[in-house]
Amino acid sequence: MKDMFPKYDTIVVGAGHAGCEAAASAANLGSKVLLITMNMQNIAQMSCNPAMGGVAKGQIVREIDALGGLSGIISDKSMIQFRMLNRSKGPAMWSPRCQSDRLKFATEWRLALEKINNVDFWQDTVTELVISGDVVMGVRTALGIQIEAKTVVLTNGTFLNGLIHIGDKSFGGGRVAEKAASGITEQLIGLGFEAGRMKTGTPPRVDGRSLNYEAMEEQPGDANPGKFSYTDTPLLAEQKSCFITYTNQVVHEVLRTGFNKSPMFTGRIKGLGPRYCPSVEDKINRFADKDRHQIFVEPEGWDTVEVYVNGFSTSLPEEVQYNALIKIPGFERVKMFRPGYAIEYDYFPPTQLKNTLETKRVKNLFFAGQINGTTGYEEAACQGLMAGINAHQSINDLEQLVLNRSEAYIGVLIDDLINKGTDEPYRMFTSRAEYRTLLRQDNADIRLTEKSFRLGLASEDRFEKVKKKKEETARLIQLLKSTKVNPEVINPGLEQLGTAPVREKIALHSLLKRPEITIQGLQSVCPLAMDVSSFEADVVEQAEIGVKYESYLDKELKSAERLIELEDYRIGPDLNYDALLAMSNEGREKLKKIKPLTIGQASRISGVSSSDLSILMVYVGR
Image (tube, rainbow, N blue to C red; front, side, top):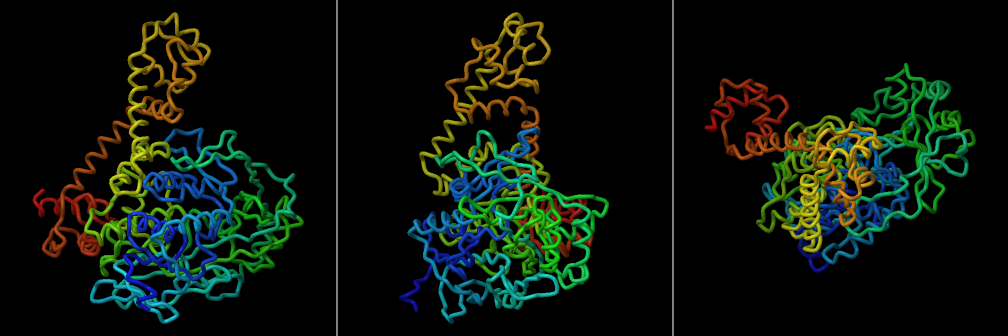
């Protein structure tokens, strides 16, 4: 089979969001990649809701785009609605989200991958890794084929020993109507890896023609829709609305009739599910005092009547699901396409990974996505991107890409995983990022495009565009500082804007710090002093945020600099922690297990106290 399969630089196992980004990034950097999937028709399948982005997740998609990944571009090409969430809050909380056309999303991903000459495809199931000593050498498949590779990226999603539950029925599967994968978990455990079980779920899909939308609240997209990618992807010209309805006490009572057959309540499901996206039966059990729960009615695309019932994830018997659905306003005549279900699957606690997502036990073997205990398309995609980049960098003896917590939400996610681990599906939130004012969705290109350009993913034109944006933003801020207005000129305008008058000559920069005032507002009331027509809209936005949040940004930058200093203090990989007798037992055990590379990393390991850290710093001479 060597003539059929040359030795690849990277084999990516699984073609979900993590696998697609891993294959694309490694191949675009120059690696020869083989993407192996169980079904070529299901590449980039949106297994759960047909949407990308959201709170913190939208920031990740923007970061993926700035680093040269494809998720933002694919989302822009396949979206049917766009909304910027949290506009009423500060810009650190603004989060782009789009409703996607499920079929078009998958189609666009496959077309994008097929245009990359370095990507080959093979439809098969990987059952075993080929390992020599402590180095991965390739894979073996269900067809008995051995394929050699310098690196392997595992992105198995929910397929490792996947078990689907609907009521009292259980059957193997990685997704409904798709078989589970076995062999890899057992092999890795034999090599000394620790494994666990997690659970996720999905709601029923229904026929949109059977719904009464007049009984629901319409949720349209933004009047002026944005997009994810910083490239020249098209803006939405037309949008489809989503709708909102609610459960009620009658619905809850119907659902409770199935609790005796619920795999979650009867104990048949052992894995922990996502805390912030519980099943509907879990919600009415845990929050029994609530009279209703929100249901988001989401269309699956332009050319289908299929609807996703967001908020109604369940593994109750199908007849209970149906009987409860028809009691929801607008669902009285509902027709189900398929019931919701829960799925259990194997994962590997991510403390067994380096910060490059390479495993500590097996060299050149990388994990990305749900195999690391995360949940969500965006969390998976960014891990795939980083694993693909670092697989390429590793075999070419190039510096690997590691993002710190002040550079990207991606850096926060990976740092949390490898240092703190997770025993429940990990989901990104803005609250997880201590530098979230720095890590906004609007400045991901400024933060990360240069890194992508140095790697070889971003083009020179794209890099020059970002440089110009930074220069123009600095020029506009300087203009605001140097432009001063007299009270008699500006006070009538300030009155129009509902803010206090001034008594002496003042710089526009100072006025802009007031929450009631925007650059556009200043221009409308004082056009002679403030003309921004020559500046692009994103430059005006950057300048305004920079001025309004100047003190917060400075504070976070100084804090980030202290963090970076700790990252400069290296710890030898062979340090004998057992010699640190003054350290707590828990701290010593955690440090021995994770083997941090820097003092900064050690400081973020759960169970390592400040006194443990002081002892460690003294020991390494810091």
